[in-house]
Length: 58
Image: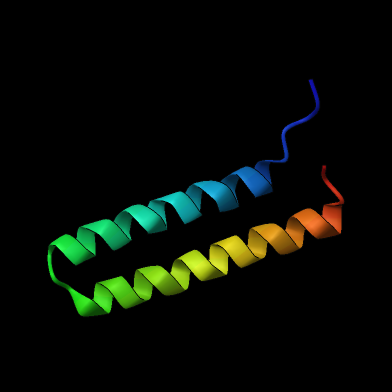
């Protein structure tokens, strides 16, 4: 088994949590929370993809 890339795992976990907050804020009809959560998803997913390319992880 290969070594775990903890930073990639953290980015993935934070993206999933942000996606969950999108659902919660939509259910609560909170526009600002939805927008902030969408921004966080884009930031965490973009960071994860960039980091994966930089580390050249397959």
